[in-house]
Amino acid sequence: MTDYAVARQRMVAEQLVRRGIQDQRVLQAMGKVHRHLFVEEALWGRAYGDYPLPIGEKQTISQPFMVALMTEALELKDHERVLEVGTGSGYQTAILAELAGKVYSIERMRALAMRAIRRIESLGYYNVLIRVGDGSVGWKEMAPFDAILVTAGTPQVPIRLLEQLGEDGRLVVPVGQAENQVLRKGTKKGADIHWTELGNCVFVKLVGEQGWSD
Image (cartoon, rainbow, N blue to C red; front, side):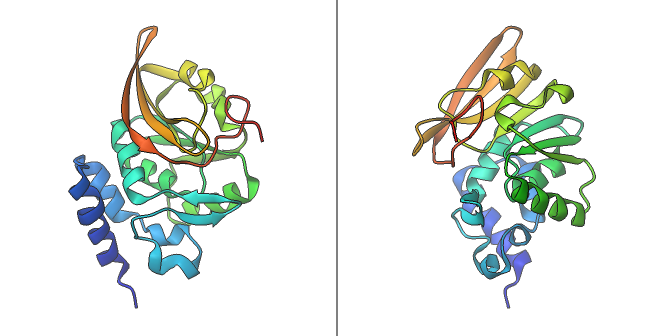
C-alpha cells in the first residue's frame, strides 16, 4: 500500500527543492495537498511522479515541478485575490487556495469544472469560486486581481487578462506555439508590464476568444 504522505515529501525534496524551488509556503502547500485525490484512482500510484497525468477530456494535471514553479512566480500573499485560467482537475486551484485569500477559477469544460468543484468542496477549501466559461477573457466582474495564472498555452498574451491585473499584479502564462511555449511572467507597474522568462514548457491549448480557436 502506497504511503502518500511519504510520496509527497519525496516529491517535494527530489522534484522541487532539488530543482531550485525556494518559497517555503509553496513547498509546504505542495507537501500538504493530496495530489492523488485529483486523478482517477487507477492513477493514484503514479500521482507523485515527475510528469503530467491525464484527467479526461484530453486534458492533464501538470507535472508537480511546473505547478510549483508557476505558483512560486506568482509571489502570493495570504490576503491576495488570484484568478486561475483553466481549473482542470482542481489541483493547482487547491495549491493556490493554500496561499491566497481568494481564488477565482474558470474552466471551459463543464465536466471538468463539476468534478473540480466537488473535489475542492470535499477538501474544505471555502475560499475558492469556480465557474464554467472562457477563461481567456478573464472574470471582469471580479477584477482587479493581484495575480493571474494561466494553465494553458496561448499564441499571445491575452489583453483582457492584462487589463484585469491590479497595480503590482503578476501574470504567469505559457506563450508560444501549440506544441511548445515559453513560460512568461509579467508584473504590472503603472501602464507598463515588465516581462521575464521562466523557461520552456508544454501545455495544452488555451481555447477561447483570446487564445486558440477550438
